Length: 408
Image (cartoon, rainbow, N blue to C red; front, side, top):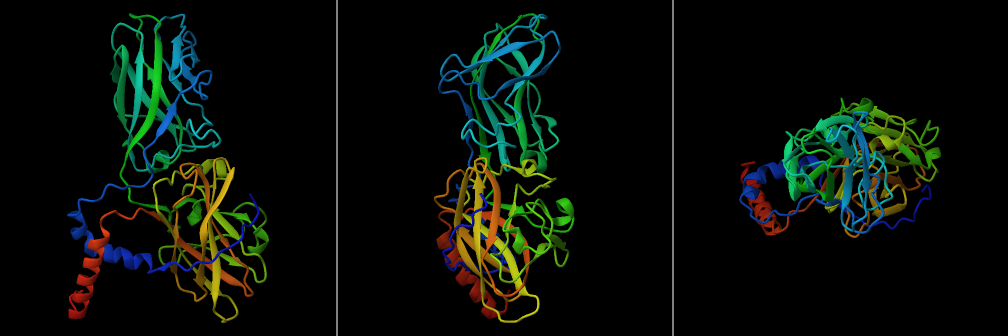
């Protein structure tokens, strides 16, 4: 995990994001008429299925009164069952997935499920009773495991049915770090003990085409550090003492940025981030992040010589550690001008695996002869909108025309 991969520089610079935002705001009305906007980030996905047998995939009886109980099993391919065995037959109790399981597949990652920007969870669910039974669908979310009900109780009918619940009640900090997904089965004493069946749990309807992982603005988590750590090659970061936040500081200039001194002659430091919330002493508190469906990673950063003025470029390699740190992949290496100015480095993400379970998102600096002050302003993930390229070309020409006339 701490081996620095080889670099393959390939220029791919883009105009500063602030300028693009201005352009996009001018084009906003034009794009609102475009009908070809189906592609969104963070793909909706199947979270749990039980295709085989003998594996409950860490689902547990989560809570309930002392006289309630039940047994989870996967005896039938495609179905998780919960057979109530309560002394007080039909008493209220809850089941959920385990606290350290992110999703059914892949099985490796641990931490929190990232549901950022998604609108619903959907369950294929039923029971063996004779009448409807009310169920409170819930999550326990954020690093504190806060209990959040997903809308009002739903009446679950006998047999199998599909039930959709909203995620709108989650704060951003909760949506990005869901520890458990569960069902709180309400009292149904009149029917006695029943058997519940779950065939699938899935997320639906992503709403984002742009996701900002970190901004390091004043007021963000950890005094602006926002979960950043020195991941490896810490000897290259002035005052770093290990895989932690020492040597990193917050630069409040402008809207704020992450800053460190990268010493001369070393390999160059490697800095990484979790899901944008606080590191809080351990990366477990801010992983995993779901970046599936995004096509570009944009890192806005600058490099400034502290005591020299030789200029040149600094190689910056983007990287991802994924699936419980079992996979290390890079979308490439780009040159950053050493000129003290912020630049947007645009890394294409096509072909990368396990992007739904990213433990750390990082940048790995190349070696450099002179001491550098590094600032990272933000990291953004984008989905280019299909079918809009011709509109962009037309609109870009139109904007040039307006600029020549002095209209904008």
